[in-house]
Length: 303
Image (tube, rainbow, N blue to C red; front, side):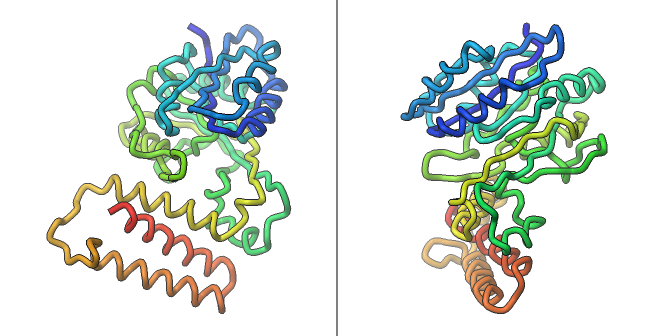
């Protein structure tokens, strides 16, 4: 068995993937480390395979094909096909630091009992973000991949879990914790939280986790994401995942056009609050209201 498998799942982002694989070429690989790089082609219709082939002479890369659309289906293929004892997950729109893989391997050696590792994700905006985004990043940073718990080697908790663009799990642990196929992005539909839900369950089960500050990646943020429309879609995805995972749905709730009346009222009230605050409040206030209304509309749309 290999020591590590880096896994990237991709769908129709060949240009960004090319950038990511170019960055992988600069990784510092510890002497003697046996590793592989898996790219899971999730039913791409662009030149993803050609991009992977261009890097085959410089990287230990294999291209897998998952024809079933959906991020979780691609992730499960990567889990099953990986040969490494440590699975290191990245996205197709990140640039790893030179010491990224090295840091995860060292963390695994330092904390052999840990079952989860995560590192910083720093947004790289294609253009300078509007001032309202910069002023609100502490609230909406997750929409742009921002995840940074500082330089201390802290233990992970349910409130400090990594994001899917940058984390690592021993394969033996990962196979015990499959992801919920109802979650994860599919073409035309965003449902967030497939990975963080599993991470929190692992930690609740007593599996230790560690923050690895030197395992750093840069996440590309296109200009198209710097809008309230993008934020609306992103946080509606949170609402959809919450609704899908809810266990206690009362069938006897009063309904309004087939939807729970109380939730309809909350969504309308939150939307009005957002629109009013956008006219008269500072960005950190109205973006908070936008997040709340978007989550409620996402919940409502999934019921």
